[in-house]
View (cartoon, rainbow, N blue to C red):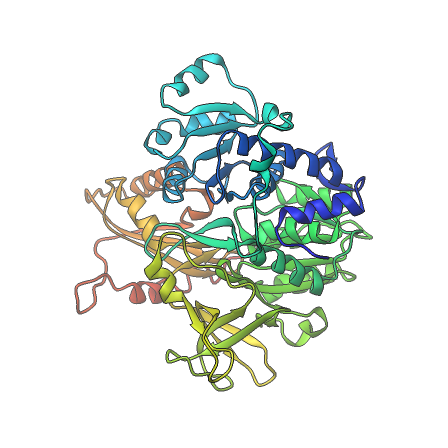
Length: 538
Protein backbone atom coordinates (compact mmCIF):
# COMPACT_ATOMS: atom_id res chain seq x y z
CA UNK A 1 0.00 0.00 0.00
CA UNK A 2 1.47 3.34 -1.04
CA UNK A 3 0.47 5.90 1.58
CA UNK A 4 2.24 9.20 2.16
CA UNK A 5 -0.10 11.02 4.53
CA UNK A 6 -2.51 9.77 7.14
CA UNK A 7 -5.74 10.89 5.44
CA UNK A 8 -4.73 8.60 2.57
CA UNK A 9 -5.28 5.71 4.97
CA UNK A 10 -8.99 6.47 4.58
CA UNK A 11 -8.86 7.46 0.92
CA UNK A 12 -7.18 4.17 -0.02
CA UNK A 13 -9.80 2.13 1.82
CA UNK A 14 -12.62 4.21 0.29
CA UNK A 15 -11.34 3.02 -3.08
CA UNK A 16 -10.78 -0.66 -2.22
CA UNK A 17 -13.68 -1.28 0.23
CA UNK A 18 -16.04 1.73 -0.04
CA UNK A 19 -19.03 0.14 1.67
CA UNK A 20 -17.25 -1.45 4.61
CA UNK A 21 -17.83 0.18 7.99
CA UNK A 22 -14.95 2.40 9.04
CA UNK A 23 -16.44 3.77 12.27
CA UNK A 24 -19.17 2.67 14.65
CA UNK A 25 -20.42 4.82 17.52
CA UNK A 26 -23.39 3.62 19.55
CA UNK A 27 -26.14 3.01 16.97
CA UNK A 28 -24.41 4.99 14.19
CA UNK A 29 -21.99 3.68 11.58
CA UNK A 30 -20.16 5.26 8.68
CA UNK A 31 -18.53 3.57 5.69
CA UNK A 32 -15.09 4.32 4.31
CA UNK A 33 -16.69 6.04 1.31
CA UNK A 34 -18.85 8.27 3.52
CA UNK A 35 -15.91 9.07 5.79
CA UNK A 36 -13.73 10.04 2.84
CA UNK A 37 -16.41 12.35 1.43
CA UNK A 38 -17.06 14.09 4.75
CA UNK A 39 -13.41 14.69 5.59
CA UNK A 40 -12.87 16.00 2.06
CA UNK A 41 -15.77 18.45 2.45
CA UNK A 42 -14.52 19.66 5.82
CA UNK A 43 -10.97 19.99 4.52
CA UNK A 44 -12.24 22.20 1.68
CA UNK A 45 -14.26 24.30 4.12
CA UNK A 46 -11.28 24.83 6.41
CA UNK A 47 -9.21 25.97 3.45
CA UNK A 48 -12.12 28.18 2.40
CA UNK A 49 -12.11 30.13 5.69
CA UNK A 50 -8.42 30.87 5.23
CA UNK A 51 -6.61 28.18 7.21
CA UNK A 52 -3.13 27.68 5.80
CA UNK A 53 -0.77 24.72 5.67
CA UNK A 54 0.97 23.99 9.01
CA UNK A 55 -1.46 26.11 11.06
CA UNK A 56 -2.74 24.37 14.19
CA UNK A 57 -6.32 23.22 14.72
CA UNK A 58 -7.22 21.83 18.16
CA UNK A 59 -10.02 19.39 18.93
CA UNK A 60 -11.52 19.15 22.41
CA UNK A 61 -14.05 16.35 22.05
CA UNK A 62 -14.86 12.86 23.29
CA UNK A 63 -14.52 9.91 20.90
CA UNK A 64 -17.23 10.47 18.30
CA UNK A 65 -17.52 10.12 14.54
CA UNK A 66 -17.28 13.93 14.28
CA UNK A 67 -13.99 13.98 16.17
CA UNK A 68 -12.45 11.43 13.77
CA UNK A 69 -13.72 13.33 10.71
CA UNK A 70 -12.19 16.51 12.13
CA UNK A 71 -8.75 15.03 12.78
CA UNK A 72 -8.35 13.53 9.32
CA UNK A 73 -9.89 16.54 7.55
CA UNK A 74 -7.27 18.73 9.19
CA UNK A 75 -4.63 16.38 7.81
CA UNK A 76 -6.14 16.44 4.32
CA UNK A 77 -5.71 20.20 3.91
CA UNK A 78 -2.18 20.35 5.30
CA UNK A 79 -2.88 21.80 8.73
CA UNK A 80 -1.72 20.29 12.04
CA UNK A 81 -4.23 18.63 14.36
CA UNK A 82 -3.86 18.96 18.13
CA UNK A 83 -6.15 16.54 20.00
CA UNK A 84 -6.76 17.74 23.57
CA UNK A 85 -7.72 15.21 26.21
CA UNK A 86 -11.45 15.78 26.89
CA UNK A 87 -10.95 15.37 30.65
CA UNK A 88 -8.53 18.31 30.94
CA UNK A 89 -9.65 21.39 32.87
CA UNK A 90 -10.17 24.82 31.28
CA UNK A 91 -6.82 26.28 32.37
CA UNK A 92 -4.98 23.28 30.89
CA UNK A 93 -6.85 23.62 27.58
CA UNK A 94 -6.02 27.34 27.58
CA UNK A 95 -2.31 26.59 28.00
CA UNK A 96 -2.25 24.13 25.09
CA UNK A 97 -4.19 26.48 22.79
CA UNK A 98 -1.75 29.29 23.53
CA UNK A 99 1.35 27.13 23.37
CA UNK A 100 0.55 25.76 19.90
CA UNK A 101 -0.99 29.09 18.72
CA UNK A 102 -4.15 27.34 17.52
CA UNK A 103 -6.25 29.29 15.03
CA UNK A 104 -9.24 26.97 15.27
CA UNK A 105 -10.85 25.01 18.10
CA UNK A 106 -13.37 22.26 17.34
CA UNK A 107 -15.51 21.42 20.36
CA UNK A 108 -19.07 21.14 21.69
CA UNK A 109 -21.32 23.82 23.17
CA UNK A 110 -21.18 22.46 26.72
CA UNK A 111 -17.38 22.37 26.62
CA UNK A 112 -17.27 25.85 25.10
CA UNK A 113 -19.23 27.23 28.04
CA UNK A 114 -16.62 25.94 30.47
CA UNK A 115 -13.86 27.52 28.34
CA UNK A 116 -15.32 30.93 27.46
CA UNK A 117 -13.48 32.92 30.16
CA UNK A 118 -10.16 31.22 29.42
CA UNK A 119 -10.41 31.69 25.66
CA UNK A 120 -10.24 35.47 26.01
CA UNK A 121 -6.47 35.13 26.45
CA UNK A 122 -6.09 32.94 23.34
CA UNK A 123 -5.12 35.73 20.97
CA UNK A 124 -4.36 33.43 18.03
CA UNK A 125 -7.79 31.82 18.10
CA UNK A 126 -9.95 33.07 15.21
CA UNK A 127 -12.60 30.35 14.90
CA UNK A 128 -14.53 28.00 17.14
CA UNK A 129 -16.33 25.20 15.31
CA UNK A 130 -19.13 23.53 17.25
CA UNK A 131 -20.34 20.01 16.63
CA UNK A 132 -23.79 21.02 17.94
CA UNK A 133 -26.01 24.11 18.19
CA UNK A 134 -26.06 26.78 20.92
CA UNK A 135 -28.53 29.46 21.94
CA UNK A 136 -28.35 32.86 20.24
CA UNK A 137 -27.60 34.61 23.52
CA UNK A 138 -24.45 32.60 24.06
CA UNK A 139 -23.50 32.97 20.39
CA UNK A 140 -23.80 36.76 20.63
CA UNK A 141 -21.67 36.87 23.76
CA UNK A 142 -18.95 34.95 22.02
CA UNK A 143 -18.89 37.34 19.06
CA UNK A 144 -17.67 40.05 21.43
CA UNK A 145 -14.37 38.19 21.78
CA UNK A 146 -13.56 38.56 18.06
CA UNK A 147 -13.91 34.84 17.60
CA UNK A 148 -16.10 33.61 14.77
CA UNK A 149 -18.49 30.81 15.69
CA UNK A 150 -19.10 28.17 13.02
CA UNK A 151 -21.00 24.89 12.94
CA UNK A 152 -19.53 21.60 11.82
CA UNK A 153 -22.82 20.53 10.27
CA UNK A 154 -22.67 23.44 7.82
CA UNK A 155 -18.99 22.93 6.99
CA UNK A 156 -19.51 19.25 6.21
CA UNK A 157 -22.05 20.20 3.53
CA UNK A 158 -19.96 22.90 1.83
CA UNK A 159 -18.68 21.10 -1.22
CA UNK A 160 -16.36 23.21 -3.33
CA UNK A 161 -16.04 25.78 -0.57
CA UNK A 162 -12.84 27.23 -2.03
CA UNK A 163 -11.00 27.57 -5.30
CA UNK A 164 -9.63 24.25 -6.66
CA UNK A 165 -6.07 25.54 -6.90
CA UNK A 166 -6.07 26.29 -3.17
CA UNK A 167 -6.79 22.64 -2.42
CA UNK A 168 -3.68 21.37 -4.14
CA UNK A 169 -1.61 21.30 -0.97
CA UNK A 170 1.70 19.66 -1.71
CA UNK A 171 2.16 17.33 1.23
CA UNK A 172 5.07 14.96 1.76
CA UNK A 173 5.51 12.33 4.43
CA UNK A 174 7.91 14.43 6.52
CA UNK A 175 5.40 17.31 6.83
CA UNK A 176 3.98 17.87 10.31
CA UNK A 177 0.69 16.07 10.92
CA UNK A 178 0.02 16.47 14.64
CA UNK A 179 1.08 17.68 18.07
CA UNK A 180 0.50 15.28 20.96
CA UNK A 181 0.84 17.01 24.33
CA UNK A 182 2.53 15.08 27.10
CA UNK A 183 3.46 16.18 30.62
CA UNK A 184 6.94 17.60 31.03
CA UNK A 185 9.27 17.46 34.01
CA UNK A 186 9.07 21.26 34.34
CA UNK A 187 5.34 21.11 35.09
CA UNK A 188 4.04 22.36 31.73
CA UNK A 189 2.89 19.98 28.96
CA UNK A 190 5.07 19.88 25.87
CA UNK A 191 3.89 19.31 22.33
CA UNK A 192 5.53 16.35 20.61
CA UNK A 193 5.71 17.03 16.86
CA UNK A 194 4.72 14.05 14.69
CA UNK A 195 5.05 13.81 10.93
CA UNK A 196 2.74 11.92 8.58
CA UNK A 197 5.59 9.45 8.16
CA UNK A 198 5.75 8.80 11.91
CA UNK A 199 2.02 8.00 12.12
CA UNK A 200 1.79 5.89 8.97
CA UNK A 201 4.95 3.93 9.81
CA UNK A 202 3.59 3.34 13.30
CA UNK A 203 0.35 1.95 11.92
CA UNK A 204 2.27 -0.29 9.54
CA UNK A 205 4.60 -1.61 12.25
CA UNK A 206 1.94 -2.32 14.88
CA UNK A 207 -0.53 -3.88 12.44
CA UNK A 208 2.31 -6.15 11.29
CA UNK A 209 3.00 -7.80 14.65
CA UNK A 210 -0.67 -7.74 15.72
CA UNK A 211 -1.54 -9.43 12.40
CA UNK A 212 -4.43 -7.00 11.81
CA UNK A 213 -6.71 -7.51 8.81
CA UNK A 214 -9.83 -5.92 7.38
CA UNK A 215 -11.86 -8.50 9.35
CA UNK A 216 -10.86 -6.95 12.68
CA UNK A 217 -13.14 -4.84 14.85
CA UNK A 218 -11.09 -2.70 17.22
CA UNK A 219 -12.62 -1.11 20.30
CA UNK A 220 -11.22 2.40 20.92
CA UNK A 221 -11.57 3.17 24.64
CA UNK A 222 -8.44 5.32 25.13
CA UNK A 223 -8.41 9.07 24.33
CA UNK A 224 -7.18 10.17 20.91
CA UNK A 225 -4.90 12.70 22.65
CA UNK A 226 -2.89 9.68 23.85
CA UNK A 227 -0.66 8.32 21.05
CA UNK A 228 -1.55 4.77 22.13
CA UNK A 229 -5.24 5.67 21.81
CA UNK A 230 -4.82 7.36 18.42
CA UNK A 231 -2.95 4.28 17.24
CA UNK A 232 -6.16 2.25 17.50
CA UNK A 233 -7.51 4.46 14.70
CA UNK A 234 -4.50 4.48 12.40
CA UNK A 235 -3.77 0.76 12.81
CA UNK A 236 -7.35 -0.15 11.91
CA UNK A 237 -7.55 2.29 8.99
CA UNK A 238 -4.25 1.02 7.59
CA UNK A 239 -5.72 -2.46 7.04
CA UNK A 240 -9.34 -1.45 6.42
CA UNK A 241 -10.71 -2.73 9.75
CA UNK A 242 -13.65 -1.23 11.69
CA UNK A 243 -13.23 0.95 14.78
CA UNK A 244 -15.88 1.04 17.49
CA UNK A 245 -15.68 4.36 19.37
CA UNK A 246 -16.45 4.31 23.08
CA UNK A 247 -16.21 6.56 26.13
CA UNK A 248 -16.91 4.06 28.88
CA UNK A 249 -18.28 4.95 32.30
CA UNK A 250 -17.74 1.58 33.93
CA UNK A 251 -15.46 -1.39 33.13
CA UNK A 252 -18.56 -3.58 32.61
CA UNK A 253 -19.47 -1.30 29.68
CA UNK A 254 -16.23 -2.31 27.94
CA UNK A 255 -16.96 -6.03 28.25
CA UNK A 256 -20.54 -5.45 27.10
CA UNK A 257 -19.24 -3.60 24.02
CA UNK A 258 -16.83 -6.47 23.25
CA UNK A 259 -19.78 -8.85 23.22
CA UNK A 260 -22.25 -6.54 21.42
CA UNK A 261 -19.93 -5.55 18.57
CA UNK A 262 -17.94 -8.82 18.47
CA UNK A 263 -14.68 -6.97 19.07
CA UNK A 264 -11.47 -8.72 18.00
CA UNK A 265 -8.87 -6.25 19.35
CA UNK A 266 -8.79 -4.31 22.63
CA UNK A 267 -6.09 -1.95 23.92
CA UNK A 268 -6.01 -0.71 27.51
CA UNK A 269 -3.70 0.54 30.26
CA UNK A 270 -2.85 -1.35 33.50
CA UNK A 271 -5.48 0.40 35.65
CA UNK A 272 -8.29 -0.60 33.28
CA UNK A 273 -6.98 -4.16 32.83
CA UNK A 274 -6.92 -4.51 36.62
CA UNK A 275 -10.62 -3.67 36.73
CA UNK A 276 -11.51 -5.82 33.73
CA UNK A 277 -9.64 -8.85 35.03
CA UNK A 278 -11.98 -9.18 38.01
CA UNK A 279 -15.18 -9.19 35.94
CA UNK A 280 -16.92 -12.05 34.13
CA UNK A 281 -16.20 -12.34 30.39
CA UNK A 282 -18.44 -13.91 27.74
CA UNK A 283 -17.75 -17.49 26.71
CA UNK A 284 -16.70 -17.88 23.99
CA UNK A 285 -15.10 -14.44 23.62
CA UNK A 286 -14.72 -12.77 20.21
CA UNK A 287 -11.37 -11.19 21.11
CA UNK A 288 -8.37 -12.32 19.09
CA UNK A 289 -5.82 -10.18 20.94
CA UNK A 290 -5.42 -7.65 23.74
CA UNK A 291 -2.63 -5.10 24.23
CA UNK A 292 -1.19 -3.27 27.21
CA UNK A 293 0.95 -0.14 27.28
CA UNK A 294 1.31 2.94 29.47
CA UNK A 295 2.87 1.03 32.36
CA UNK A 296 3.76 -2.43 33.58
CA UNK A 297 0.91 -4.93 33.84
CA UNK A 298 1.12 -6.85 37.15
CA UNK A 299 1.86 -10.53 36.55
CA UNK A 300 -1.09 -11.54 38.73
CA UNK A 301 -3.47 -9.51 36.55
CA UNK A 302 -1.96 -10.94 33.37
CA UNK A 303 -2.39 -14.47 34.73
CA UNK A 304 -6.03 -13.78 35.61
CA UNK A 305 -6.72 -12.42 32.12
CA UNK A 306 -5.07 -15.40 30.50
CA UNK A 307 -7.16 -17.78 32.63
CA UNK A 308 -10.40 -16.01 31.69
CA UNK A 309 -9.40 -15.48 28.05
CA UNK A 310 -7.41 -18.61 27.18
CA UNK A 311 -7.76 -18.23 23.39
CA UNK A 312 -6.77 -14.53 23.34
CA UNK A 313 -3.19 -13.43 22.54
CA UNK A 314 -1.85 -10.78 24.97
CA UNK A 315 0.71 -8.27 23.65
CA UNK A 316 2.63 -6.36 26.32
CA UNK A 317 4.11 -3.18 24.85
CA UNK A 318 6.29 -0.25 25.87
CA UNK A 319 6.27 3.13 24.17
CA UNK A 320 6.89 6.83 24.55
CA UNK A 321 5.10 9.63 22.72
CA UNK A 322 8.45 10.76 21.30
CA UNK A 323 8.78 7.48 19.38
CA UNK A 324 5.26 6.00 19.39
CA UNK A 325 5.86 2.30 20.29
CA UNK A 326 9.31 0.91 20.96
CA UNK A 327 9.07 -2.67 22.21
CA UNK A 328 6.68 -5.60 22.62
CA UNK A 329 6.68 -9.13 23.99
CA UNK A 330 5.53 -11.68 21.39
CA UNK A 331 2.76 -13.80 22.97
CA UNK A 332 4.69 -17.02 22.33
CA UNK A 333 7.50 -15.72 24.59
CA UNK A 334 5.23 -14.31 27.27
CA UNK A 335 5.41 -17.27 29.64
CA UNK A 336 9.14 -16.76 30.18
CA UNK A 337 9.19 -12.94 29.91
CA UNK A 338 6.13 -11.74 31.83
CA UNK A 339 8.02 -8.93 33.57
CA UNK A 340 9.90 -7.75 30.48
CA UNK A 341 9.08 -4.78 28.24
CA UNK A 342 10.16 -6.91 25.29
CA UNK A 343 12.19 -6.50 22.12
CA UNK A 344 12.13 -3.82 19.43
CA UNK A 345 9.02 -3.63 17.27
CA UNK A 346 9.42 -3.84 13.46
CA UNK A 347 11.25 -0.84 11.89
CA UNK A 348 12.74 0.25 15.23
CA UNK A 349 16.20 -0.09 16.78
CA UNK A 350 16.23 0.04 20.58
CA UNK A 351 19.55 0.39 22.42
CA UNK A 352 20.68 0.63 26.05
CA UNK A 353 23.34 3.35 26.24
CA UNK A 354 25.59 5.01 28.79
CA UNK A 355 25.74 8.79 29.10
CA UNK A 356 28.64 8.97 26.66
CA UNK A 357 26.64 7.09 24.00
CA UNK A 358 28.50 3.80 24.34
CA UNK A 359 26.46 0.62 24.52
CA UNK A 360 25.86 -1.04 27.87
CA UNK A 361 26.90 -4.60 28.59
CA UNK A 362 24.33 -7.32 29.29
CA UNK A 363 22.35 -6.55 32.46
CA UNK A 364 24.06 -3.17 32.89
CA UNK A 365 21.62 -0.33 33.64
CA UNK A 366 21.48 2.38 31.00
CA UNK A 367 19.08 4.71 29.19
CA UNK A 368 16.70 3.32 26.58
CA UNK A 369 17.43 4.97 23.23
CA UNK A 370 15.16 4.52 20.20
CA UNK A 371 16.30 4.93 16.60
CA UNK A 372 14.31 4.69 13.39
CA UNK A 373 11.38 6.00 11.38
CA UNK A 374 9.12 6.26 14.42
CA UNK A 375 11.26 8.90 16.15
CA UNK A 376 9.30 12.16 16.06
CA UNK A 377 10.56 15.62 15.10
CA UNK A 378 11.04 16.94 18.64
CA UNK A 379 9.13 19.30 20.90
CA UNK A 380 7.17 22.26 19.60
CA UNK A 381 8.80 25.61 20.31
CA UNK A 382 11.30 24.04 22.73
CA UNK A 383 14.72 23.81 21.02
CA UNK A 384 16.67 23.22 24.25
CA UNK A 385 14.45 20.30 25.33
CA UNK A 386 14.59 18.90 21.82
CA UNK A 387 18.39 19.08 21.78
CA UNK A 388 18.58 17.22 25.10
CA UNK A 389 16.39 14.31 24.05
CA UNK A 390 16.73 14.12 20.25
CA UNK A 391 20.20 13.62 18.82
CA UNK A 392 21.74 12.95 15.42
CA UNK A 393 23.91 9.91 14.86
CA UNK A 394 25.82 8.32 11.99
CA UNK A 395 24.48 4.85 11.08
CA UNK A 396 28.06 3.68 10.41
CA UNK A 397 31.49 5.03 11.22
CA UNK A 398 32.57 7.65 8.72
CA UNK A 399 29.03 8.44 7.51
CA UNK A 400 27.36 11.82 7.85
CA UNK A 401 25.12 12.01 10.94
CA UNK A 402 21.64 12.31 9.48
CA UNK A 403 19.48 9.85 11.42
CA UNK A 404 17.80 10.78 14.71
CA UNK A 405 17.58 8.95 18.00
CA UNK A 406 15.50 9.84 21.05
CA UNK A 407 16.78 9.36 24.59
CA UNK A 408 13.76 8.20 26.57
CA UNK A 409 14.73 9.15 30.12
CA UNK A 410 13.89 5.57 31.15
CA UNK A 411 16.54 3.39 32.78
CA UNK A 412 16.47 -0.22 31.57
CA UNK A 413 18.72 -3.27 31.30
CA UNK A 414 19.09 -5.78 28.48
CA UNK A 415 19.32 -9.47 29.38
CA UNK A 416 21.58 -11.88 27.49
CA UNK A 417 18.66 -13.06 25.35
CA UNK A 418 18.03 -9.49 24.15
CA UNK A 419 14.89 -8.81 26.20
CA UNK A 420 14.63 -5.46 27.98
CA UNK A 421 13.61 -4.84 31.60
CA UNK A 422 12.39 -1.51 32.99
CA UNK A 423 14.18 -0.12 36.06
CA UNK A 424 12.89 3.44 36.52
CA UNK A 425 12.65 7.00 35.23
CA UNK A 426 15.44 9.55 35.42
CA UNK A 427 13.35 12.73 35.45
CA UNK A 428 11.05 12.05 38.41
CA UNK A 429 7.93 11.86 36.28
CA UNK A 430 5.02 9.88 37.73
CA UNK A 431 3.56 7.15 35.49
CA UNK A 432 -0.02 6.50 36.60
CA UNK A 433 -2.91 4.86 34.75
CA UNK A 434 -0.95 5.12 31.50
CA UNK A 435 -0.33 8.87 31.89
CA UNK A 436 2.96 10.64 32.46
CA UNK A 437 2.29 13.21 35.17
CA UNK A 438 4.57 16.04 36.24
CA UNK A 439 4.92 16.33 40.05
CA UNK A 440 5.61 20.04 39.58
CA UNK A 441 2.28 20.62 37.84
CA UNK A 442 0.37 19.03 40.75
CA UNK A 443 2.41 20.97 43.30
CA UNK A 444 1.82 24.29 41.52
CA UNK A 445 -1.93 23.76 41.48
CA UNK A 446 -2.10 22.68 45.15
CA UNK A 447 -0.08 25.73 46.17
CA UNK A 448 -2.86 27.86 44.67
CA UNK A 449 -5.28 26.46 47.26
CA UNK A 450 -3.56 28.51 49.98
CA UNK A 451 -4.03 25.50 52.26
CA UNK A 452 -0.40 24.34 52.40
CA UNK A 453 3.03 25.82 53.11
CA UNK A 454 5.12 23.14 51.43
CA UNK A 455 3.96 20.34 49.16
CA UNK A 456 5.50 17.39 47.35
CA UNK A 457 3.82 15.04 44.85
CA UNK A 458 5.27 11.54 44.73
CA UNK A 459 4.74 8.48 42.57
CA UNK A 460 4.42 5.44 44.84
CA UNK A 461 4.25 1.87 43.50
CA UNK A 462 0.65 0.66 43.23
CA UNK A 463 -0.55 -2.77 42.07
CA UNK A 464 -3.32 -1.41 39.83
CA UNK A 465 -2.13 2.05 38.76
CA UNK A 466 1.57 1.38 38.23
CA UNK A 467 2.21 4.38 40.44
CA UNK A 468 -0.29 6.20 42.64
CA UNK A 469 0.01 9.92 43.30
CA UNK A 470 0.72 10.72 46.94
CA UNK A 471 0.78 14.34 48.10
CA UNK A 472 2.75 15.16 51.25
CA UNK A 473 2.29 18.68 52.59
CA UNK A 474 2.69 20.89 55.63
CA UNK A 475 -0.38 22.66 56.95
CA UNK A 476 -0.56 26.37 56.13
CA UNK A 477 -2.60 27.36 59.16
CA UNK A 478 -1.54 24.57 61.55
CA UNK A 479 -5.16 23.54 61.99
CA UNK A 480 -5.44 20.66 64.46
CA UNK A 481 -8.31 19.14 62.46
CA UNK A 482 -6.14 17.44 59.86
CA UNK A 483 -8.98 15.35 58.46
CA UNK A 484 -10.88 18.52 57.59
CA UNK A 485 -7.81 20.02 55.90
CA UNK A 486 -7.21 16.85 53.91
CA UNK A 487 -10.84 16.82 52.83
CA UNK A 488 -10.55 20.44 51.63
CA UNK A 489 -7.42 19.58 49.63
CA UNK A 490 -9.11 16.59 47.98
CA UNK A 491 -12.06 18.81 47.03
CA UNK A 492 -9.70 21.44 45.59
CA UNK A 493 -7.84 18.81 43.55
CA UNK A 494 -11.06 17.38 42.12
CA UNK A 495 -12.08 20.85 40.99
CA UNK A 496 -8.74 21.87 39.48
CA UNK A 497 -7.09 18.67 38.27
CA UNK A 498 -8.26 16.00 35.80
CA UNK A 499 -9.13 12.63 37.31
CA UNK A 500 -5.86 10.92 36.48
CA UNK A 501 -3.94 13.63 38.40
CA UNK A 502 -5.99 13.35 41.60
CA UNK A 503 -3.86 12.20 44.55
CA UNK A 504 -4.75 8.77 45.90
CA UNK A 505 -3.52 9.90 49.32
CA UNK A 506 -2.87 13.29 50.93
CA UNK A 507 -0.64 13.25 54.00
CA UNK A 508 -0.16 16.25 56.30
CA UNK A 509 3.12 16.48 58.25
CA UNK A 510 4.46 19.11 60.63
CA UNK A 511 7.62 19.45 58.49
CA UNK A 512 9.22 17.93 55.39
CA UNK A 513 12.77 16.50 55.36
CA UNK A 514 15.46 18.63 53.68
CA UNK A 515 18.73 17.71 52.02
CA UNK A 516 22.08 19.48 52.54
CA UNK A 517 21.09 22.20 50.06
CA UNK A 518 17.91 22.99 51.97
CA UNK A 519 15.69 21.43 49.32
CA UNK A 520 12.89 19.00 50.13
CA UNK A 521 14.32 15.49 50.21
CA UNK A 522 12.00 13.69 47.78
CA UNK A 523 14.05 10.51 47.93
CA UNK A 524 13.61 10.27 51.71
CA UNK A 525 9.85 10.77 51.43
CA UNK A 526 9.58 8.19 48.65
CA UNK A 527 11.35 5.64 50.84
CA UNK A 528 9.13 6.51 53.80
CA UNK A 529 5.95 5.80 51.86
CA UNK A 530 7.19 3.12 49.45
CA UNK A 531 5.06 0.43 51.13
CA UNK A 532 1.91 2.56 51.40
CA UNK A 533 -0.04 0.49 48.85
CA UNK A 534 1.73 -2.79 49.38
CA UNK A 535 -1.39 -4.44 50.78
CA UNK A 536 -3.76 -2.77 48.32
CA UNK A 537 -5.93 -5.31 46.51
CA UNK A 538 -7.86 -4.41 43.37
